[in-house]
Length: 480
Image (tube, rainbow, N blue to C red):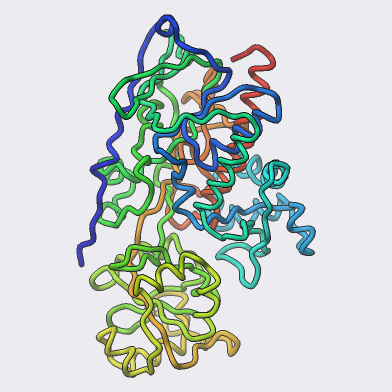
C-alpha cells in the first residue's frame, strides 16, 4: 500500500483530573463552562444566552474552527422552516428512520429520537441569531430520502463556524481563545468544580463553574486509540482537527463514566492525493464512478462516502480514481472545496478514454466496461451489475481525480442520555457534566457503515442545543 502522511503527533491529550474540595482561592466563577467552540459549543452558548444564563467558551485555537471548520458545513434537519419554504415535507420520525436504516438499527434509539426532534428547533435558534440557511438542492446524499441538508450560502464549514462565533459574541457569550483545557477539578463525589486551562505562555489559569459542557473532540488524532478501536483506519490519513486528541475520553475514564460506540466513525473515500483536500461525494451520487488502479469498479458508490474509505484503502496502492464528465464538473464547481481542489491541480482532464486509461495505468477496454456498469455487490457478483441510468451515464470527455480513504472524525465517546447528561455504567447521570458533539456517543452505531451523511453536524448542532437547554435548566433550578 502506498504511504501517506499520518500526523497524529500533535494530538496527544494532556487531559487530567484534579481531586479537590474547592478551586484555588480567587478563581473566577461562571454559571456554565463550555469546552470547545465548534458548532456544538457555540450552539450550546446560543441556547444558554437565550435562557439568560452566563457562559464561557474555552477554545484551544486562536480562532474557533475545530472539526466544524474542516467539514462541508451541511447540517441535516427535519421539519425546519427552510424545508417547508422549499416545499419539502419532512419529519423527525422520517429522519430517524433514515438514520437507523443506515446504522442497521444499531444507533442509540434515545439519542436518535432526541437529535432528530431537536434538529428543527436548533435550526430555528440559529436563524433567530442571524444565520440564514438554504436547502441544498439538486441531489440527495447517501441514505437520505428527502432534501434536509441546510447550508449557508458560502457552503463551507469555515463559514459556518465563523457565523456561529459571531452570533455567540453578539448574544453575549464570552469566548476565551488560546485556552487549552487540560484539567477538570472534581470533588470526592465526582462533581465538577471547574477547570484549568493553559495559555500560550505556559501559564495555567482556572475557572469555577456550576455546570460543564464537554463539546471538544473525538479521538481520531490519537494513534493508540485509533489502533485500539478503529484498526482498519490505523494507517489511513487522519484529516480531522488536531483537537481530536481523545481528552474527553480520558476525562470520562478518570471519572468512571461509561463510553459508547467507540467503533463508529466518519471516514471518507474521496480525499484527493497528493493535494490533501476533500472532493464532494455529490459527484458520485449523480453518476460519477470510482475505479481502482486496474480500471475496475469495486463498490456501490451510492451506499455512502464513509464506508467508501475502507473500500478505497483495500484497493491496490490504497488509492482509487473518481471519474466524471463535463456535467458533473459543473456540479462540482458549485462547491468551494471542489474549486480549491481544482485550483490545486487535483482535477485532470478533459480526456478521451485512452488518455484516461493511461493516467490510471489500466486497460482501456476494462475501464470502458467499468464506466458503463455500476457494481452494487463487489467484483465477484456479475448479477449485481446493471446499466447506469441514461440520465447519469458518463459521456466523454472525462475528468479524473486520484483519491484515497481518510479518517475525518470519530462517532463514539462519552455515553449520554437524551438530555446530553454524561452517564455512569449503571445508567446514573453525572451530577453536573454534560457532553455532546464529538465528545459524546453519536448516532452512527459502532461501525463505519453506520454513518449517515451529516451525522457529525447533527450531533453537534442538535446535541449542542439540547446540552445548552439542559445546562440552563440546571442553573436556573440551582442544581448545578
